[in-house]
Length: 77
Image (cartoon, rainbow, N blue to C red; front, side, top):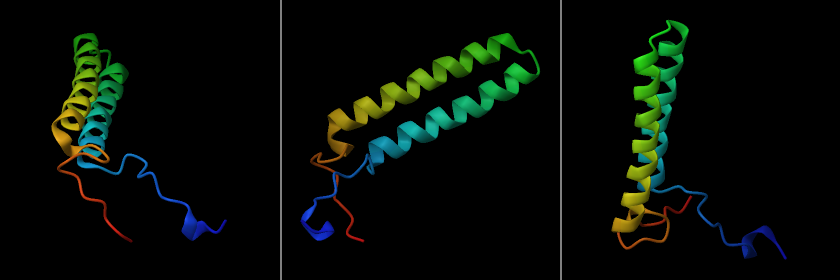
């Protein structure tokens, strides 16, 4: 079996995954800075934002922007 025979599963390369990861990355950066400066309410707000990112990715996947969804097209490299 050659590497050309193996189908690429996509590894989450979809708009849903990109949006979810971007939101969660922003949440981690905000939370890290807030933790450094002991702004506890902002640490908790960033944790909530991370959950919002997870929920956003899930909703976008349900709407069709996930891998294999109706509104997703695979890019050929």
